[in-house]
Image (cartoon, rainbow, N blue to C red):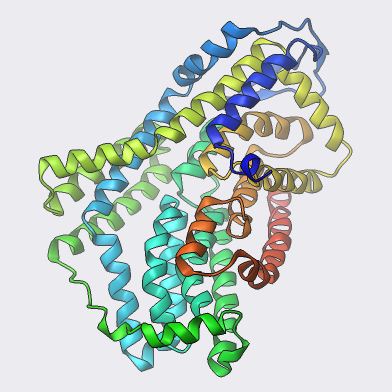
Length: 463
């Protein structure tokens, strides 16, 4: 069972490709009529009719991923360039040093300590909402645990600041290219459309997690024995000497990199809102960002190219997942069973109110997330089904993307099958059982919050 839960995402998706190919020999064929509206190919509700199925064999299973790569080439190129550009920015050390400097500045000044948790968590939340910061939080756990203990808190607070801060931003993603960007691209929505409501969600998500951590931190500071990790931290207080951690230097070049990064985000938002930029323009902007930051960060040509290639290489798994997920769609469409599947899913929720249907989508994504932890992988796997399903049941595709965003983001931090979650807890020395007990109240809160936040999109026709 453990081996099944830890199954590689790519293997799991390709196994689904094989299962769909087998299904084309068994499931009756069917088709919906489709129409092009505002540049998007939409399913016409109520137009389903039976059609002869076309069984897909070994040849289709082997060639479908190749076709998937071709069809999803623009999304894959986008992911490669984004990954390379962010790797260059990280190579300059500007982001890591900037966060570390802010943390130590608050830790050293007693009159600013009350702002330590909210300010640092907002920084990590910005990383989550803008560029999908997740695995990158792991090194910061080792920095923030001694800082939190030195301020009278515990290891749970030190772990939560980077990990849950980024998770709140990830769940309330505004510009995250690896979740919202890919999901909207597959759903044929303008990239980063619906930004205004997602900003509201990000504010609510971030404020909620900060409030939770601050209330807990206040209780622990008043009575350290109430901590679930009290015995662990008692030993750590003797070995940790936060004052011995040297303050990282923040060079002029790194300051310029941070400034360039912020300016680029402003240009990104302006280009999307004013000129309706799509994948090509946004990828070009980030390529330019990477080049400029490489120059400002004084990276040699070898350092720049090695960093860019390393970042793009880290996206290789995502690229294969996107290609295989598109292969699934190709086989299902060629075998005439995709629309049969949509018709069956629509029948299950057809009698539900659109708000409830959106909430069922959220729960569906939450279940899938237990097995597929990659946000980009889940988007590539589910959105080809959820986007047209939204057309059939009367939900906007933007709402379907939002249901995916919630199901992928707000559930991850508690999953024992998540490599990032277990890696963070391993570094922190905290057992999953204690983390689960501590996280359960906030997890229930975010579950209810997701259901509530899926109501307004129906009321104001979120597109």
